[in-house]
Image 1 (cartoon, helix red, strand yellow):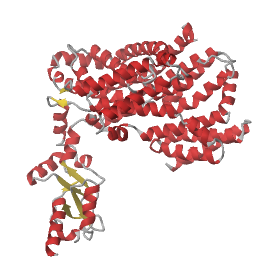
Image 2: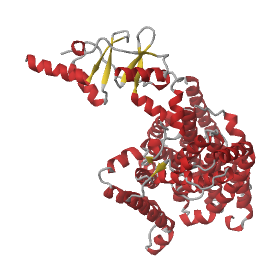
Image 3: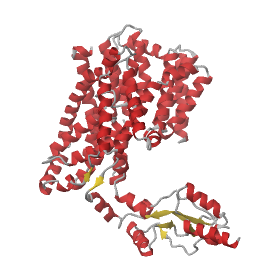
Image 4: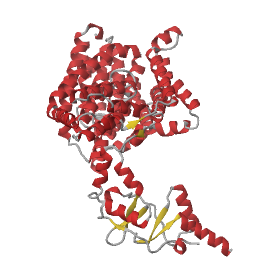
Length: 150
Length: 460
């Protein structure tokens, strides 16, 4: 089975010039955790996820500082969250996104998801234009259908 | 990029040709050309420094400038293993919350004033750099500074600069503070006690001088912080912001680290007692402790080794030490030492000044490990000229550490701190914003070292 048979074609994306807060609202409205970011020609530029918001609002050095417990919310976090209304998602999104194509085998997508620790992969055409998205759930649904047919 | 690469090749080849023209042998000229290419590689292509080191050492082997046996000998595995052991220990301390606990101590300082804050961050930064290393130390100090400055709504840049200056100065206080410390200890035979007796007092004087300088230089910013501290009153929110429960793990890790430090401090006595080679205990203590850590935390042992040890940097150090060793192996450094001694009229005091200022100016531009690795064989060569090496080693140590304060790329601690500043606050510091205070502190502290090395009898 190929990606094109199970992927979601009506994929919601967001423009690169949207602000962080606009993108976050969209995630909350749609009850999803990530969105592809595209340019005016619908070319994929990156992925914006809830994790990008968290890593923006929390200090970058928290991992290096080691184990501790926040007992209160630092002022910086609130300030950084407020900045989301002006910060463009270009600054927040992940740019090195692994993509796939419509005619890729389902097993290959599953391999990529497992090895790259990806929850979902944007599907692009030969011009890098976004044409869909495939999530782990879609892959498993594809495998289930394939087994039932067999 | 291509222009820089061509410049690198042209300069290193020209240096090789000039060395040959000056009467040096083919192998001596090759060693100089390859080492200078690696030095410029770190300057122009920092991210690719390992590439230059790998290709450079291969050329030295192929041209028979150095043989395999000596390459391995000069790679200074004992220093690399020491750093591996310390990095594993630091990984454990981080994992058990030791550094976060230190940050929380800074946040809990009672009745905070701007001057108190300045003195605390300067001393904690310097002492932490003495005990662990400058790069580890600076991350935690910067974290504490950002939290305090955010709370009091002041710009963190001046305090960040102060902490970096103090960290670089503190890193000269013991053999543990900076990779050049352990490198010098290993090659000179100086003990941890020698560092405590000779380096630590100079470091303290330089630190106090630095505090006085920055207190004057940043008087406006300190006054602003003082005003904010009075306006916002007690820092209750900061006091309870983070907590690190004093769990059993934190206590055990503190115990392991404490025992390691004590035994390192006593290494010379123990070596005499057990009739061991000089510095055997100093170099093996972190290995014993990291071995103990890996038995205790066996589930995370692989993580400590793979994630907390900076293999990229250590591999670069090994190859660089081997390349610097080729300078000694071929006798190139003997020629250089002979000429330097002639310039200094075989006067140790004059030579101390030359080494100190070369190290200071050089490490303001170059990575201090690169510079010190190159100068160590030169200093060793002075011994054959019957010169007293004692003040020269200290000049090399202080020049290598204090020179890092002059420019914003002068030491790894500077680069790490400025990277955090840019990422967190979107503040990109300009060269001159750093340079004037860096130069002032760099020159004054180096002059202090110079005077102390020349005037105080036990340094001579």
